[in-house]
Length: 208
Image (cartoon, rainbow, N blue to C red; front, side, top):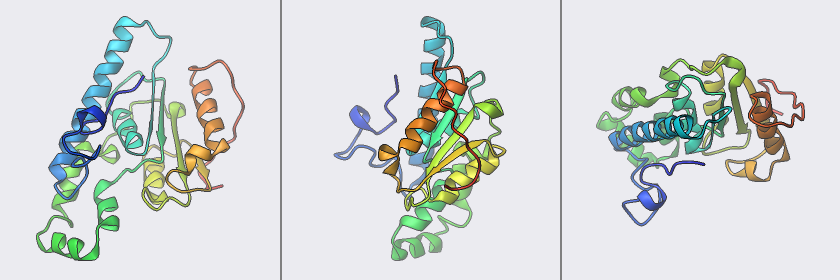
């Protein structure tokens, strides 16, 4: 069970799903992430109130990895938070991805270099202390990821006090073909009491 993020899927407001969620108008991103965190927390509350679960965890990939790490700093009592190929600093990603002429104009108009970072901080997982137990925090990321650069996952890993992490040798979408990632997710859920089967994956903070 998973929510649809604001401006994605059936909630889109333009032709492309997710368009306008991310961009140089950082307030769109702030509002979108705040709404996403609210939606996820409401869904968790509904599950707890109506489904009598034995446990509740959150798992997100890419933008979902960001929202997972955000919710992990807001929602107490989660049994697991698994952040997959997460971005942890959107202004840094935009600075790295936008064309140089646009970046220069953004610097001229003081979008980056202070204001953007300040605005984004209110929805930054790096500005929140996680309320999920240390042994229930999990991260996986690709060492060849050029969209969510490995330093993004590494920053979250450091902020989360170096919990379990799995690096796989691939790109941003390479997780989909990685047996390491599939096994790691299974093991993380099992270690959190959310599945019955445990495979025993060894993890540490170093890329594999």
